[in-house]
Length: 87
Image (cartoon, rainbow, N blue to C red; front, side):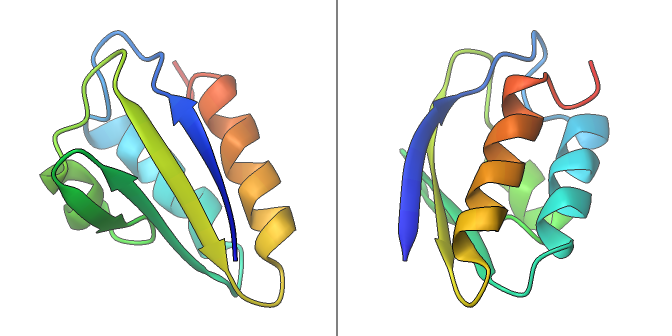
């Protein structure tokens, strides 16, 4: 298992479009991909789970990847978030 804390930079947080981009990135990997936030843990491969987390701009989440390609998944997701998730 690998994990990393990242801060969401999108001005509107993880609304539908960036949540979809995050999920599409997570789905590329075989590893289990979740993220922890102040209200619990969300499945990064589920748009509904990501939206339900209500992540706002400036919120910090902890990406958690567990599986055969966990480091690649963590690097890919961190890069996508750092790039603004399409915004």
